[in-house]
Image (cartoon, rainbow, N blue to C red; front, side):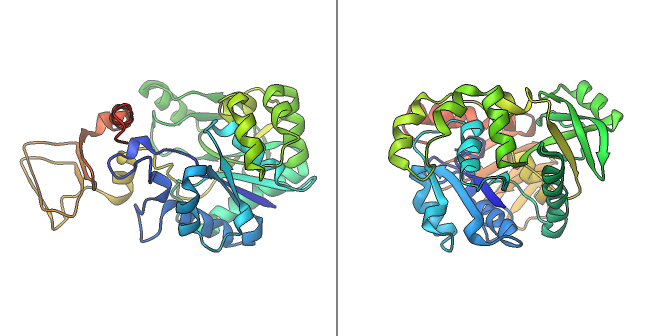
Length: 336
């Protein structure tokens, strides 16, 4: 098997700690290890390092080798420009041998339970071998979350495996509550497993343009990628393939998971800051603070305060998904 870690994201919702020079996947949010380091170790737990590849931006090469010095130099695939997950999945899958299994996973998710993760992953691997389908890992929802896409499971196939009836966009609150009550809806984790030949066949059928432009290219040939990638469509693998294919299955995941999509995600995992020694809260509640300084909060609730080297973020929990607007404004000024 080949494992492909997607690590090209810019982490715009994690300003001020995440910047264009050091995006979210390189941050140490939950331990003394970065998210990309933890993802690598999760795969290296059962898989040889020679079978683990990282796809990232050219400008993150030094950061990647610093975080994962033991990965072979040829196992870091450099994207000259970001093109979302469909082209990245195509390039990653091309690294595999004929009929080899490929696992695709983001570099910036939080999955602390390695054993349980691998139990679920092995179900997907065996399913991909047996049913020659495209497999996605679905997270069993524990709340009506509006920040995730959903997978509607259809017919039961075997242990924790179902065929996919449909993919659903991020819902409003009432729709999310409806999904939760039906018990056959899962959060779309963005982790996938497939056989190389099956994937290429489906890409050729449903996403011919990307398939044709990339199928004959070596993913390790950075010079050729610089010439070709500007012509490749920027699109997610969900839109490009999974929502079109009739050969998609979902495996019900049985492990703790977060896509760490915003500062609220971090707060949910680490808790509020009312017991932090450097945080004093008066006439307020539900406050999350990340700072090395003493911070006083008076008369405010449901807010997030994050101090970075070059900036300070203050936002309500409700607006935390909009932090990327700050990042985008700073980009326009050349400061992100």
